[in-house]
Length: 561
Image (tube, rainbow, N blue to C red):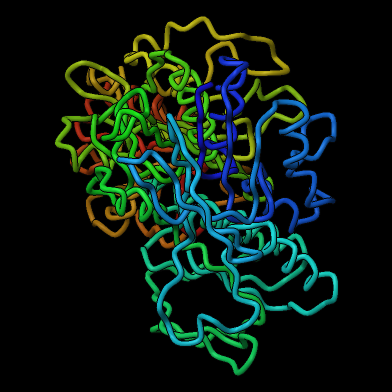
């Protein structure tokens, strides 16, 4: 009987064990887990804190409500799960794993024919003064979520400070503002979601966060935590912030120490090196989940990209290959989606920053519009930024933000990226259409069309960031072609060189514009801005640009009323 040992009992480890059991009914399968809780949905913890998930055990249950306990795995899958059992060393020559029973201190050695390392990652905890004070959490384990929820229930917490404006940080910002706490997010980089968003899209999300009462301090570094027993404040290089709750959301590091000590290859990212079948440098040892490197499908580079979705895929691949299969894991696009109150932010593939660093000759386009026909109830705006290779039209990445349906647009582009598709493919895909769901030409196809128009010289678009730099230039006129009622409701702030001419009046009022000036046309979403460009160029204006995304995608301040 083949002996399979799995180190790690959360996503990748138990998925590998379960798949191996389906492939080999006779194998002896043992899973070692140093904690007490197994197979939990860690990504659901912010929603337990917010109150959307009412019982923390729901994160550990099957869809029919059965807790995925060691007993469940033994009775249903004939898998032995040993909790509070830490793997302390791997002897590759003897093919044994040395273990320690944490409850008793007892040690033992467990033999294996094949081994799976699924040790995950650990939250980054900075070596700062006061970091060990009470009520400072990483939200890396259900125990943290329970403790925060208990404090909220007792009314212990009023002022929360979150360190890091990434996925977990902003999900917790949402959760705690929903619980009526005063929330400050401190981010060392100059924008929120710095790992995957470009500044234009990040700016839209940041403005929305501020409207929801989240105070965002970017370009600011935490220096120490204040307090005697429990935290009472956070000192940064710029502020002293009161805090009775701190969440450390500064990213993660792979737990690769056990593999490194066993002499397995470790990559430049600090994670375990695996091939496309998830084998380590030892052919009898597989590894998966947050402890391993991945290949970025677009760049071909090794990356550390810890995601629950990726870990589950790793587990399935490993389970097949433990039983003689040769399933390959293609790699990752670092596809992410995050909810921030009613706003959704999503991304897949390369950002513009990534494309620039990798040396691509690329082109971008940013478009805004409703996620379904404007006449339909519930239609909401989304903004999309599409990045493509200039010479080939190959899609490189997308970012999207808005209160409308963002996730499905990101997923469509993720599929195109996986298959190596182009902007022509993105337009040509026969996507479903009915007014309750989307428009005849979907938002991603509109973005593809915008890239095509830019490549053909028909659209001379500029980003909101480039437009902002031109706002005070004497020979640059910002031409707002919206209706007077629209302009009364909301306008660009601090824009001295602005001219208001509704699109329907533009042909009859051309004399009000100087052909020697640079003209930046825009409207709510800049569809009318694009029309204005055509009118002006047809009338002999040679220096006309369109502000991509219009007012909807403007990440800077407005004047209202």
